[in-house]
Length: 600
Image (tube, rainbow, N blue to C red; front, side, top):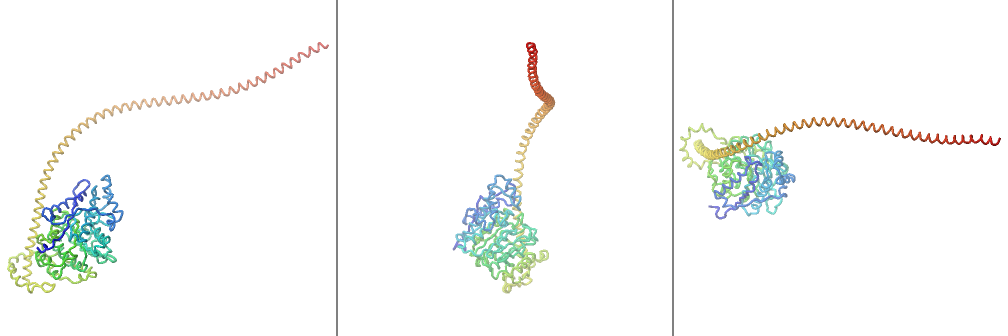
C-alpha cells in the first residue's frame, strides 16, 4: 500500500459528555445523542477507530467563543447549566428558532466548540495530518447573537477564527470552509461575510428560499461584501429533493475544485452534515456513502485534465486517478459533524470519509454519472456570477450530455449494443480531444447501456438499504409491541390501583360532604345566633348611649344646681349680713328712746 511508507495520523475526537444535551422530557428528536453514538460504534466495530489517534473533548474558552459570538450570547449559553428548573430553560428555548435545552446543553455546546478548536490546532501544528471531530450540538446555523437550527455555538467558525486571530504563529493565513450539509450554513456565511482570509463554500437545498433556513441568504447571488466580496460561494439546489452523487460531484468538478486551486488554502474545514444522505428524514436527497468519500477525496486533490472525463469513467477508475494527484493544503483537513439524522446513513457516510482520511480503499457503491438539468443550470449561474473573482470559472462548459436520455427510449436497444463494449476499447485512441469528448453514436449508446446497469445497481443498493431499514423497523416494531404489552400490564395494574384509590377517595368525599352539610347547618345556626347577638348588642349600645346621655344631662343639671345653690348661699350670706346691720341699727334705735327718757 502506498501509504505504508508514512502512515497518516488521523485524529478522531469523541466525548460521551456531549450526549447529555437532550430534550428536557426525553422526547424523540432528530438531533439526538444516538447520532454521535452510531458513528462512534461504527468506527469501533470496523476497526478504523483503532487506527486513528483518539482524542477526548475539551471545553472552549469564552474569549475564543467571543471571536465570533457576542458576549451576551456566550453568557446566555453558559447560564443554561445554572437554571434550576427546566421551565426557565424551556422559556428561553421557546423564544429561539428550532432549539431545545436541558441541564446538559451548556456543557455539550462548550465541548463541541472546544473540541473542533482542539482538532484544528493539532492539525495546524502538524501533530495530526487531519481529523474528524464527532461533535454535537451542530454549529453552522448559529449566528453571532442567536442560537438556531439545533445549533448553539458555531463550532467551525470559532475554530477558524481562533487559528487566524489567536495563533498566527501556526502560519494559517487562508482557510477554506466547505459546507456540504443539506441546509445552508447561514451562521458561518455571516461571520466571514467581509473576510477575504476565509473562503466559505456551501452546497445546499434552497428550493426558492422555502427550505430551512428560509430566505435568500443561501442564494448564489450572495458572494460577500467589501474585502470579502467573491469569497462566499453558494450552490443552491432548486430541486434538491432528488439530487444525488452525480449532482454533488459535478459541483465539485466545475466550481469547488477550480476555485480551491486558485485560492490555495493553508487548511480546510469541512462542515460535514450528512443529512443529504439516502434515507435522511429531513434532507430528502440521495447522496451515498461512496459519494461523500469521493467529495472528500476531491477536496484533497488538484484536478487538471480530468474535469471533462469525470462524466464517463467509473467511480473506481476516477478514484484510482485522483489518488495520484497532488493534495491541497498538504492534506490539512478538519471535519466537524453538522447535521445528519438517519443513524444508518450518518454512520456509513462517516465511515467512508474516515477511510479516505486514512487513504484506505473507499466504499464501493455505484451511482448514475449524469447530473440533473437543473443542476447544470445552477452550476452555470454560479460560475457566471463568480467568474469575475475566479478566472477559472470563466470558461464555458461543454454540456453535451448534461441530462440522461429517457431509459424507456433506449431500453429496447440495450441488448443490441452490448457488443459495442468490446469494440469501444479498441477505439479509445481517438475518443477524446482536449477537454471535449467526441464519441461515436455506437460508443455513446454503449456508455448509456453501462449507465443503465449502474442505475440498476444503484437502485439495488438503495433497495438493500431500504430492506435493511425495513428489517430494523420490523425489529423495532416487535420491540415496541413487547413494550406496549409491558406498558399495558403496567398501566392495567396502575389503573386498578387508581380505581381503588378513586373508590376510597369517593368514600372520603361522601363523608366529607356529610361533614360539610353538618358544618353548614352549624354555620347557619351560628349565623342566626350571631344576628340575635348583634341585635342585642345594638340594643345594649342604644341603652348605653341613652344612659350616657342621661348621665350627661344629670351632670349638667347637677352643675347648674350647684351653681344656683352657691349663688343662693352667697345671696343668703349677703342677706344675713344685711340683717345683722339692720339688727344693729334696730338695737341702736331701741337704745335711743331709753337714753332720751333718762335725760328727761
